[in-house]
Length: 326
Image 1 (cartoon, rainbow, N blue to C red):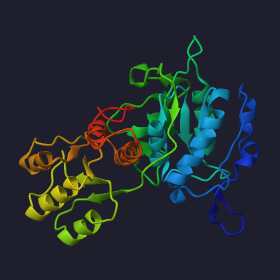
Image 2: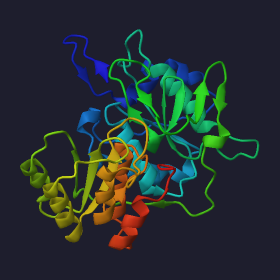
Image 3: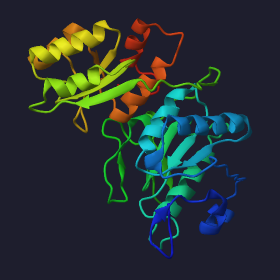
Image 4: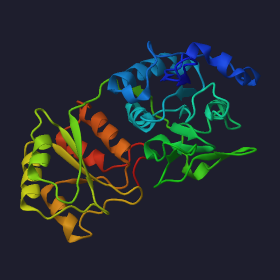
């Protein structure tokens, strides 16, 4: 975002003026080219159609560049980055998301350092020429995170993001230190861009005193194919007859129900407590330690894979596909 000098209102940044706002880019020993979606928008307005637009740009340019940096508002960055991590199968190149907490052009903006370091990471190679980070990632305030392990934790601090259940991929100081043990190995399979996604999904957070009418309003949505439940602790939910009935009705009708924890860190372990064993018994899928952003975008991705049967989708939801789950 940039600030309007007259009104003070923030509006989307025109990427054509990138070099004007960040002249330091001219000092990098790289060939840098800029592409943009047709109409830059606030990231709060991002939706799956924008993901597809970004995917189209990446697919068009994939064979012509060594790496990519995507400038994106922080509010929905973890959703977009997670979605692309699934939609680009067997990715072999760095696709680094970054942005800023303070608008570009302001004196104390964090955007310049985030952008410059992201470009360095996107172009970093091993002695044999292979990329150091061949995966979709988020760089923010000196840390590089796996995209589908990342959540936005703060609207105020420069350290806006966190990867609560997985180590950071790299940290930037005087030098950029890469944590090789945490970075995915280069795939030897052919890259595949998926150009469809299913939005017939919903989510609901369990809370004390939830009424059946609230849950039913979501459960009865026409053409619903998937539901993410945010439960307590390690996957626990109230042992209420009505809740079991509603969930059984959904599952029997073909809706995939995935259970993730409301906690920032930790994982779902259905059956550890009595208050989660009933969920496993009726067919709720345990989401392990996936973030909400990873779980919802993974579900949308899998539901759009026409070659997968219902039982395959259920199996894949609890499997590690892109490093999103332990």
